[in-house]
Image (cartoon, rainbow, N blue to C red):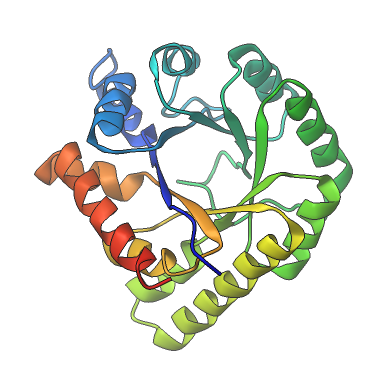
Amino acid sequence: MTAPPLRLGVNVDHVATIRNARGGDRPDPVRAALLAIAAGADGITAHLREDRRHMRDDDMVRLKRELSKPLNFEMAATEEMVAIALHTRPHACCLVPEKRSERTTEGGLDVCSGLESLRAIVAELSRAGIRASLFIEPSTEALEAARAIAAPVVELHTGSWCDAIEHGEPARAEHEFARLRTAAAKALEFGIECHAGHGLDYDTAEMAATLPQIVELNIGHFLIGEAICVGLHKAIGRMREAMASGRSRA
């Protein structure tokens, strides 16, 4: 297949994490989002967690008001978050698993067990003109559940693959990448738009870009960490170069 263009969504959660470490208003995640767009981001992702550990309610309102590019609202599948999303009206909502004890999102959403409730949420968001996506494990079972839920988009969890690479486990990394490849192909077969994210850096983003079915990568922690050292504009520019290099081989 001819690989479509590959979009970059930049997650600004951890700008808010730094802000909240001292309180106050700086650094401002909305300012970072605007800088990310100026540097080449195709959209902004932000996760309003139940415990508000990084993004605040007002951050989401300001992001929606000030961004010229799509806002991807990451959220748990709860009544509270659905109500906030319906009020905010972002371009998209990505439903993710959420536990208070975790440092960051761990694994994909349990779409098989939550089939009926997730179907209702996806339908409600869709009626409001909001694209719903499901953050899932790269498995056939999860893709089949996503199709049953009628989700227009899935985001494949790349964390296990990135973890295997980081810990120098080539056999596990090869296995996890094969799962991603199979899941991305299955998404295309099912007519579901395929995104990917979690734990990606320059090298793994370049590799993920070789999968032609994936049309968007969402990257946050790595880019914000790089920005502290080299600046957000340079970090995003290098990420786009890595993605373009991988896409040329798709």
